[in-house]
Length: 229
Image (cartoon, rainbow, N blue to C red; front, side, top):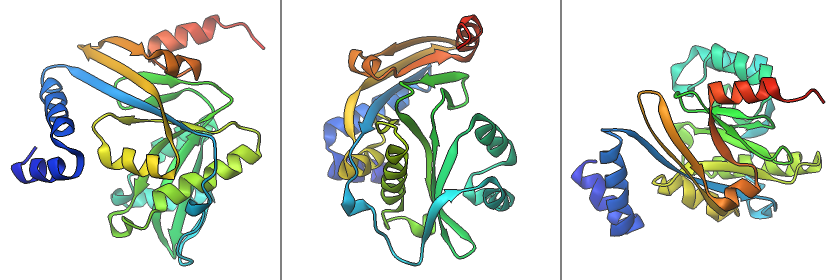
């Protein structure tokens, strides 16, 4: 962390949070260590349903999103889209003409997080929100929060109880945005690992929502053993 970034962080989030963030960064130079703050929302905040009329918000189909895989700045690839749509995931996004301003992904199935072969499971009565993105040209316009709120409204109308998600403990800006729109804390998940071996723990409140991390191989074994429904 640069000195100027540290000063800015202390001003915005306090010295204790900044020092803890620094400690987590230092620990991750030696081992993989993450604290994921689990959050949920089950009420639509009408304040976050509206945005500038220039943006067209909707659940976007694969053909529309494929056009943006050609431009790296949108952080989408054909491989990711193939995997997400095959799993039944949906993407709520905002278009500004022919530009993709922001998007977020929504899943009702256990979902891989990061690139370390870890699967996040959750109560299927909820939808898991992940991979939120806002293009740098559109930041500060609340598109991330508005997109989540609109998606929440639509998904609850389909019968789901709400959204669950997770944010790294030290991602203070994202957490602040989530709290502002109505997300609530439901505990932490801890992940510690090295050389492909992990210790994974979920807080008791997370477990009430079925939120837990599993190694991909372990999840696959349990899934094969599960009886057919």
